[in-house]
Image (cartoon, rainbow, N blue to C red; front, side, top):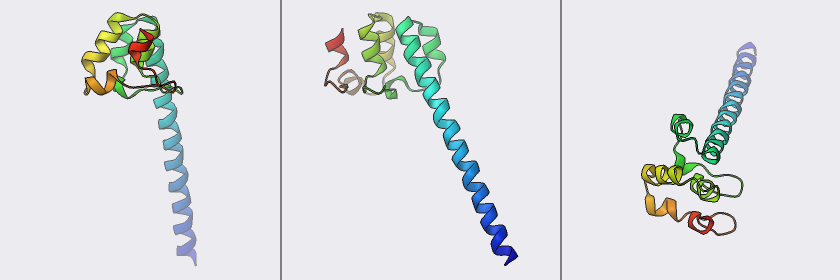
Length: 107
């Protein structure tokens, strides 16, 4: 009976630790994505390059990519960087947000 209890206690502890790590990881990812969006809005290319995320994968709640944000705020240098760093340029440039608009529609 004691072995069964120890096994249960260990599995619960592991689940709690893993769940907590997952929550922390998600919070860190959201923070980095927010920093990336703010860097794009400010036109801060250096700050954007320092963020350790793939810029083409970041989308906000409206499904806008960083390229959408750059176009909306007139940040041409940032837009050029994002396009050059995209792995699939055609797919990245043609991403649509919740309103079915591309970054070019905002430019």
